[in-house]
Length: 309
Image 1: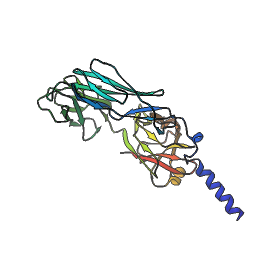
Image 2: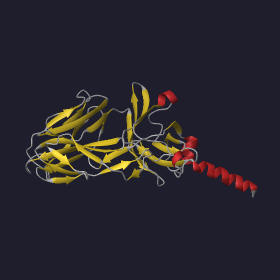
Image 3: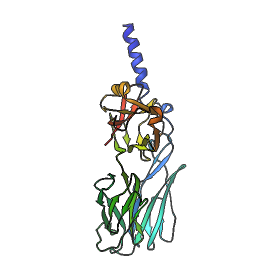
Image 4: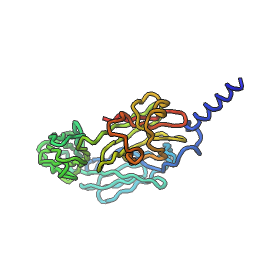
């Protein structure tokens, strides 16, 4: 009986490192505010409702007063509830603030349904090999989300030596590296698509596991002969005592990940991270592991995983 009590105590001690019931055990990740949309479009004289969510120091969603402001009151105004009113044609920035955190969205005001209100780009793949040619899909929309035809668009590449783009949105992968592609029409700018070129690259999107939270992008790449693991700025996960990043060939057993996976480093906050795997172990190759794992190491609990492709 005494032995059973000791084993139970040891088990509970390990598990306590991964149960977020005591705030003092949760790392401070910083306040943040998120506007629900990165952009809004509205007809002159009309209104559109903006919404924002506040997260406290521990990353928990909380109710808090949102302070709304705009960059150009001559183009749009906003009231205390986030209701945007369009006054004149143009573009302006919308700001939401709570505590020390803030977020920004762009607002496009148009004069009629024939004007460009938004541009959306999409692609069948953002991982390319040198020599690949691909057409980017573009939707030029009016304020009601209806496609507009015969609108002149201008295309741009952030690095034409890596990925070039012609006047129709056809891209060509020219060299290993990264480049973003965007388009504009009537002064309205599209979303950007980031293209990775080269065989020395694998990427994946985090999926949550076991009721915990995990999202965002992971990138494993060879840069100047070094193997680098990057978590993108949109990376988010649950946290507890002993939250680690691992490389692994399984995503079903935390115990196996802990015993046979490759431990990268402990993390204590969301957002962008960069780890030089070659510095930890020069023998690790880009093809050695299938998953990036977020693991509560003390109890062997997987919070989430990204499958590298």
